[in-house]
Length: 268
Image (tube, rainbow, N blue to C red):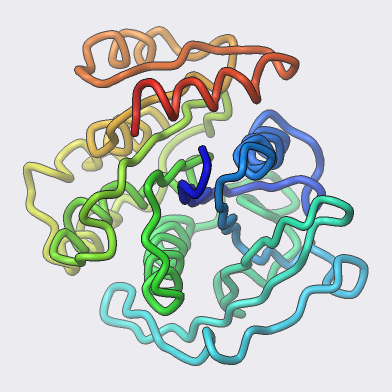
């Protein structure tokens, strides 16, 4: 992986959120690339539950200050950064007061999904891409983790398809057993149409449930990783029919070597 650039876009990263399959993989996978002399960037949302003082987050003024349009609304983007102790790995945080500064990550105290999770996902995808453009950092691989990050492959392949920075980027999506009950906002597909997404690319999101979000992400990816040992039969069958490289589930002890082999042997 020497000098290769890998962008990690995740809904959860350890140690900023509790340990889960997503948050731990989003820590150990970039560490493996860094340990193999690759370059990494890690992005996640700056949820209100993240303690800025404890984790020493600070705003990056030169990257902040732009507005992103979500469904005809101008939403300000703030970028913060922190370093994971002892690993010398920087994490960039996508922040917006209205979308992310709340006590829950995806749901309220009664475990009801936030009504605007669809807009939060759109904002997160656009925020990451616009920040990478400002950094002028062309990734060789973009690896997506978690359903809140699942719109990024679609936006790279459609909304930003003429952006030369991503011309040679390969997208990998990890699929986890972390679904949610019900659907996101039923108006999500109209908000994607506002960004001039072609109907044939987003028809699967007429019903914006977990499986359909992951299907659209995988349809716009160049490789898939099974991040959980068990995933739904529907998604398992969908993965089997894809004409892209697939890395089957590996345990935490084998993760680093398996990911490096997959990147070098199947994706790059």
